[in-house]
Image (cartoon, rainbow, N blue to C red; front, side, top):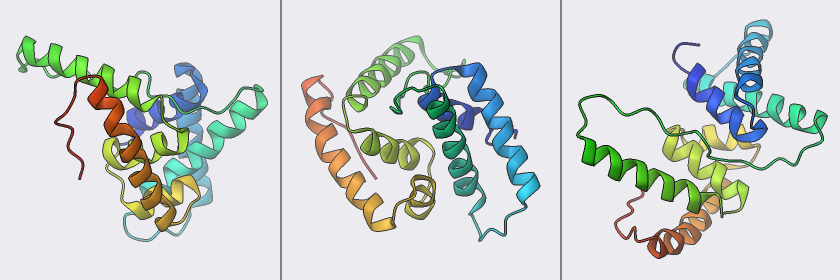
Length: 163
């Protein structure tokens, strides 16, 4: 929980938009994994955990009769104290612009980009979380990046680099 808890809570919050409920669902996701004791391949823990959390979040949204829209609100991390103030201001502005642009994308594109670039998941892990094939994840990423570039350029970010 120490390693993945905060990031998983923010991921769940992207679905349900309630940080306190997201914390409860994060704990529930870990509890379910402890009870289920799944046999996981190497590096499969994180993907299985996120898939469990995603399913819990989707069920929670369904119960509350809300639409499931992935949001990046609140996903930025607090800056470390050593970073210069100007760098922080510029970084926060770029993060705000990135969130704004990503929220304009189809939620599948947004989620795939988030899992790979913010959570550093592999294609296989992201595919497992989203319930898609690796090829579908590859297509979602390519389409998402293709649609994100002009949005970022329109906001003045022309040096966006992707893996």
